[in-house]
Length: 198
Image (cartoon, rainbow, N blue to C red):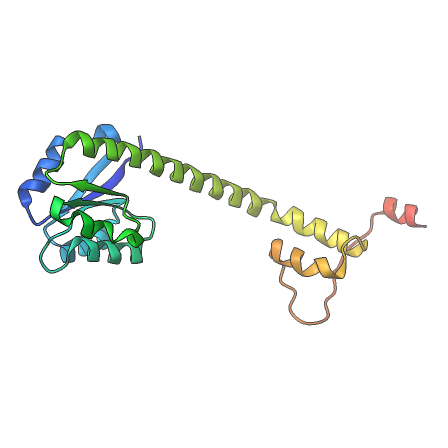
């Protein structure tokens, strides 16, 4: 089973330890790949480890959770961020909707609530991963088909079945480069075709 990498960020070590040990990470398809006690350290770890999910507190020294989220999203818009927040910080956190935070979780963290959140998140990540895989397969199929598409284009061009207005579109679609204003296309005609023409 594919797993998603998780980074925990909180200036309270015991909070991170509790989260790490009370959640069945592997069973849900996640793996904790690191912990950081402030946003600066979290950025360093993220750059090296490229986590899929970051679970971070808001109030931390050097760099708070919202600033961390802003930096992470700037470098990797697809990264998912879960914010841990105290009741008195909740409205402050909600103001940062433009950061596209995945979830806001009130402290003290409830293991069941966090687990439910992670299950929902995994469903979303799985769907996105499948869509990206399908796109890559289509791109590969298209790339493999290009020689045939290019050949058919030139045949159609020679036979006059492509209008002048369509040429530029097909050149772009089929990745054909024709620099300059004048170009020639070498081709051969089979005896059968020549006989039909005559």
